[in-house]
Image 1: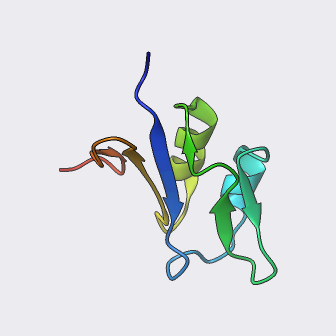
Image 2: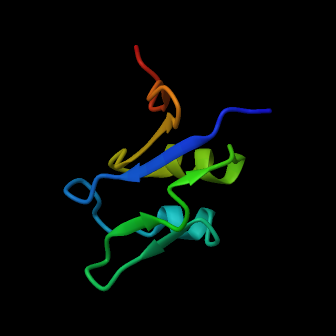
Length: 77
């Protein structure tokens, strides 16, 4: 069984571009302030979620392993 992910959006970095919503409309939403948030923060790994994180123009989306906190995206250098 794959490790679960924890998905977060840094609301201070988010510019509301909607790239994440456009790429993964079932996984992200924009609120009234046009800030993104994940629909399901703790979830099974998903290519759609990873693609959305990679497409964020300000890298506001982080993905970590839920159990250990180890980074999935962005990767550690």
